[in-house]
Structures are given as C-alpha cells and as structure tokens.
Image (tube, rainbow, N blue to C red):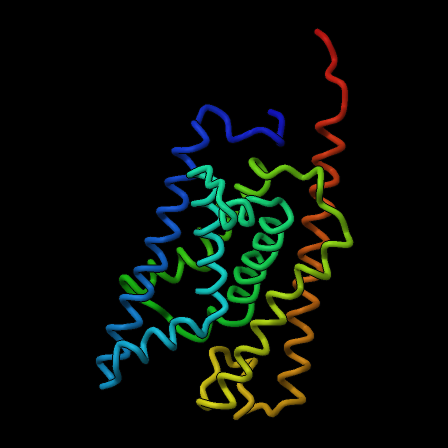
Length: 225
C-alpha cells in the first residue's frame, strides 16, 4: 500500500465526512455535559460556555473538526483553503497529538469519568487525535512541509498559553493543574509551560521526520514483477 494514498477500499469523502461528524458530535456532547454540570451548580449557560472554551482540548478539537470538514466538503473559500493547507493541517496534527499525550500522562488519573462523560473523554482525548493523525498520514500532501514552518506552528499553543493565563488572572480559574498560578505561582507555571512547548516541538519534528520518510518512499521507483 502506498502510504501517500487515501485509506484502501474506502471512498475518501464519506470517510472524512464520518470523521468530521464524529468530531462535531464529541464537541457537542462535551458542551452539553458542561452546561448540565455548570447549571447544576447554580451558574448560567453563558458561564458553562465560557468554561468550555477555556480548555486547549476543546479548542484544538474544534480545529480538528473544522479541518476534517473542510477536506470532506472540498471547501474552496478562504477559510476552507486555509484549513486544507498541509502546513496548517500538520500544525493541528501536532497540537492534537500533544493533547493526547499530555492528557494520558498527566491528567487522566485525576478523575474517573463515567457514562457520557467517559464517552466524551475518550472521543476528545483518544479517538479524535488518532483519527486526525491517520488522516494526516494518509490524506495530507507532504511536499511543501519544511522545518522553517515550525516557528509559525508554535503561535497557536503559545497564544493559548497567554489566553489561559490572562483568563486566569481575571477570573482566578485555570483549566489545567499545571497552569494553576493560584497554587503553583508563576515561576512553576512558566516552567511547566516550557515543558509542554518542548513536547510540542518534539512532536512537530517527529511529524516532519515522518513526512520526509513518506516523501522518500513515494519517490522510490517501483520494481516490475
């Protein structure tokens, strides 16, 4: 099987459409759960949405679902072309891989979700990252990917860090324990953030390396039999 081709025996558009729908379902499910939990505490729906949009997992899954939708629908407007660019797709792939890795190594043991909470948890942190990484490997062209793009890819996670810290400074609420300035203080939080940034850089370099190997493999002449 040529790894640069779509998945075998499955039409590309229906497969991507199913993946995109799964991503949107996971996000809608998590929003519903967040609203239910927040309103049960006597807070408003607006508060629930505000908290929901504070998580890197949610924001990155929104990018994942949008990118899958853009490709599945063949969107050719400005937004669609942006999300279908290989560099943008690779940046999203690196970020969703960091979501999966960080959650499973640092955060999963902090709670034991049940029922629909477990479904949303698995979809957002395990299933959709795996689905998007498979999409990246099989369906995203790699010819234009270069190391110099790495600096641009860092803008999103660094922007999220500033967003989370500014939100926290105003509301005193932080989405993740390793960003909790109230408990850890800024020196420890900056150190933790540097560690996560390093993980992102390593993941991005790994994807670039895999892209290079895929390009080399696709250029090898086939042997006649």
